[in-house]
Amino acid sequence: MTPCTHLDQIAVARPDQVPGCEDCLAIGGRWLHLRVCRSCGHIGCCDSSPNQHASKHARASAHPIVTSVEPGEHWSYCYVDDAAFVLEGD
Ligand SMILES: [Zn+2]
Ligand SMILES: [Zn+2]
Ligand SMILES: [Zn+2]
Image (cartoon, rainbow, N blue to C red; front, side, top):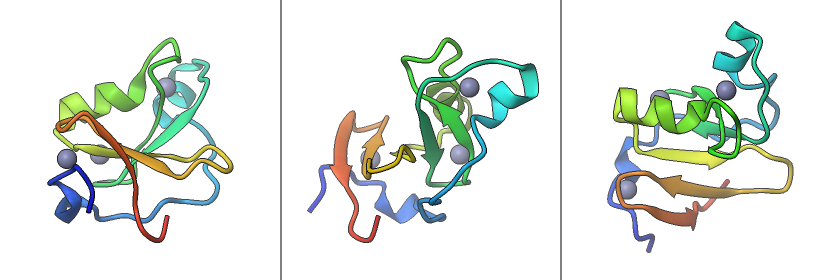
């Protein structure tokens, strides 16, 4: 059981390797940590990064769940439920 009711919106797997925040790469920005959107696979940067592309993407697209793609980190977070959890298989 997870505290999130949006698990049916997960369409993509957690990637093992990502090149970087795709929005920062486009503008020449820098990022701290990376998150993958589980609805569309968008790679964005965390809220400790200057541009906070992961949460901006979640708001703009209404995609609720991101997962950390930092090495060794497998937690997910739902913006709608404001809940963190680990998904089976991640
Ligand atoms: Zn949720
Ligand atoms: Zn970014
Ligand atoms: Zn998305």
